Picture 1: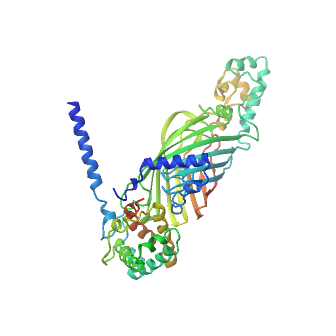
Picture 2: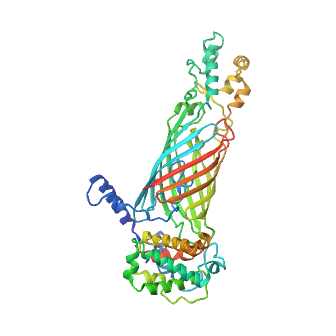
Picture 3: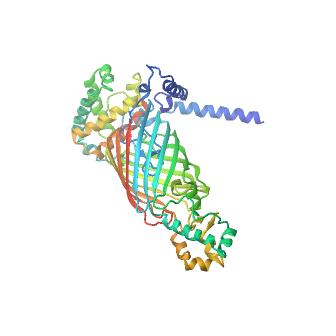
Amino acid sequence: MKGSRGSKLPVKRCAALLAAGMALVGGSAHAGILDFYNDGKVLATPGVSMTDGAGGGGITPWATITGYETRDGINGNVHYTYVNLPNYSLNSLGASVGFYDRVELSYAYDILPTGSTFNTIGLAGNLVGGLLSSPTLGPILNSLGLTNGNQLVGGVDPWNTTIKMHVVGAKIRVIGEAIYDSDNLIPQVAVGGFYKWNENKALLETLQSDKSKDYEAYISVTKIFFPLSTLLNVTGRYSAANQTGLTGFGDDHKMRVEASLAYLLKKDTAIGVEFQQHGHNADGKNVTLGGGVDLTTLVNNPTLGPVLSDLGVNKGLINTLTQKESNWYDAFVAFFPSKNLSITMAMAYLGNITFTPNQTGFYISLQAAF
Amino acid sequence: MKLQMKAIAIAAGMLLASGAAVAEDKVAERTDGKTPTYPGIPSDSLEAFGGQAGVDVWVDDLFYYILADNRINQIFKSHGHVERQMALNKELESMVLGGPNHYSGASMSAAHAELGITVTQFNAVVEDAYLACDAARTPYHVCNQLIAALAPFERVIVTR
């Protein structure tokens, strides 16, 4: 069908991808990477980089393919995102590439310093660890599985606990056209996935998560409504992650909904809001010390309980160290001074993260495109 | 029995496919009427553009930018009759916004059939369209009504 958007044969596209790869590897002087470079997308239409590194909004991936390339080429970008919360700060550094406005690959490295947030766990661990040398209490603790020395608490380094996580992502645009199909309601649809691995296995065990690495899969549906100067995205993410994986993963993947709504004030300026449904794998859990023994087990032990209570390891401490996870919201302003740079600033309203509530803070993300 | 069912299914599939191939893109192939967008283009959009006179100025600005745009100007120049292209665009842009004047040109697919236009080139024109709105001081949200009205033509203009 003449003019049909699918008129470029997949074979031709695969051949082009293969040629691009060979040019990179073979280093042919003439068929260089510049032949594949394209920055033809209209300003702001690829979105920005979300916290897992994929193209989209601030926290949710969209059906748009990252990079300014149209189906005529390849484009890529790097990004840095910083979120400043009362008890944590997130630094996310990443890069992504878009191939022919069809396939996207991304990588992000999240570094989350937690300051002194987990110091209370360390203190509790030290306190209980001290009791191991007691002739009466030591054996009881041993029988519960606590046998190490004072370093009972895994992964917690007082005043220095930093969570680190790698994320690789891939996305494929499946059907639809987000921008030019203004005469129908068919959106652009993409499916994608992330594989995440967290470096702090010990800390994640302490926080009672089931895994330190896991995958996520998602489907995103995006459309721009030009008469309203508005972009709408809805994403369904199949995930078991706790706080996007930063505090580990549960056992059970569930479908979670995410949405972005962006209003274009100008061709280079957008405001909007986002929502991200979170799981509750860790809700109600506190922390484990050593051999998988959590505080509740210790406090409920008939012999240990009273002694620990006198020392401050009691229901009050359990309350302090009980985890909860909230849905995420953000309200943002995104500015696109050129195709080479975007600046997104937002209020991140993240609720409960592990034991700390009211995690509301400032978000800024810079994306530089080639 | 199973083989017969398979044959019927294949025949039905081919019929559907051929039907789909033949079915027209009514909105992109048309040569009159306001573009039926979701949501609809407000009835005062042409007026917000400054009426036909405002559209005329905008088209003049558009072609100023197109002819200054080295990514695409040679396409327009080699096609020739730039003045006629401008005159037809003035009719078309007003038509898609629901204007009363008649568009006397060819359909967008016929007009672009032999040109091998890419998405990259089409987007370049969109960028120049936004520059034209800036130059004519057409408000961004009014400009987006025109972009929405013209957008479906992308499906037939882009052939490469």
